[in-house]
Amino acid sequence: MNNTLESSKFFPYIAWALVIGFALFTYFLTVQVQGELSGLSTSVERLEQKIDTMGATKGGEAR
Image 1 (cartoon, rainbow, N blue to C red):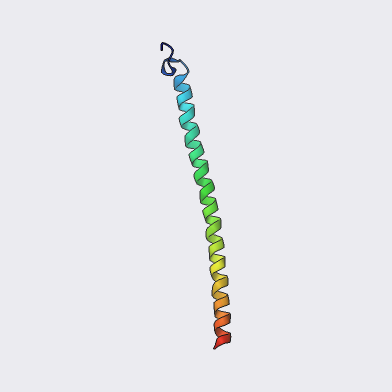
Image 2 (cartoon, rainbow, N blue to C red):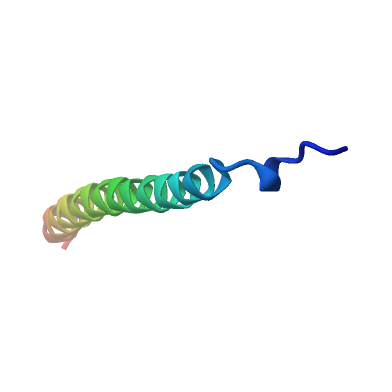
């Protein structure tokens, strides 16, 4: 095998492009997941407030 990938003159450019591309992909994936988790957190807080309100209302009626 005389013509390997590492012996190509374009190998450093391709390698760096892949490393930078993967870093950007990971960054954008992290930002997306963080946004989704923030939305879930807000939804859970609203649900907890509704449950607390329902519990207070039903607790008041039963007493």
